[in-house]
Image 1 (tube, rainbow, N blue to C red):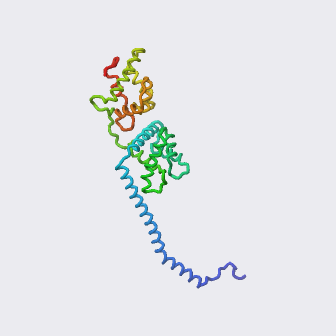
Image 2: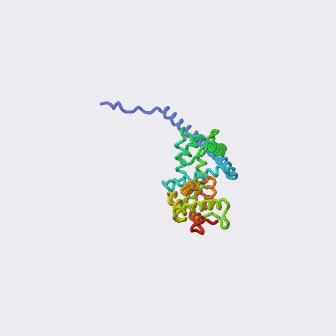
Image 3: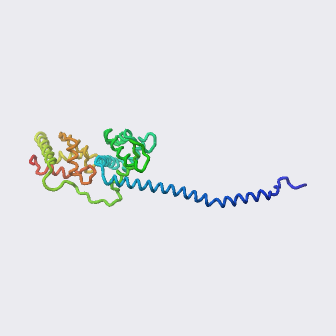
Length: 287
């Protein structure tokens, strides 16, 4: 029986030599390939460093001249998000990012003023279209220094950073919070007028139906303190006053709450206000 046909033919010496030469040439070119990859990586790193420097410069310019309208909006949205977090858990940044992602219809990572307004309204804070356009223009202008964001649009990362950085994390040391920010001494005129109106309402109620002035005021506040935190925001405070049949403007509510707000979150602990209203009791008025 002869040799099996499957035996391989001997390798061609010329082909073997060519393969070895090709491998040698490839080894010689390898440093050039590596250097080309390194140069490309270095170019990307340099580009990222330039963008980072541009971003830092833009943020420094923004922080050096804070915009009152933007600061006020951040404070208001923080108050809404803080309340959501206390009632349902989660963090301010999570709620805000999820909200913007829901309204970023084209998934571009940017939103215009219309999408921005709808997103904020879905969180429970109503703002005008003019305010929405102003805020988008402000953040879009800052971001245009280091991103390719289109005109009249903004990425939402910078706003989320502002809101989150303005909040105190629960793991951070908590400074002692005074019960009231109201300064000692004579009451400011706005507070004096407010207490006088409340006392007149309480006096008429007590004269007709009895009850105790401290009970009436505290009960009104407790009814609108939904999370039993001992604090009220502007809207809750106005609603509590409506319960006492006292109409007040939004501006008045803001001024009174800010007088007693010791945290800057747009909420006041109402114990001190109850004491101020009912001081000298039964059965009012003086002042």
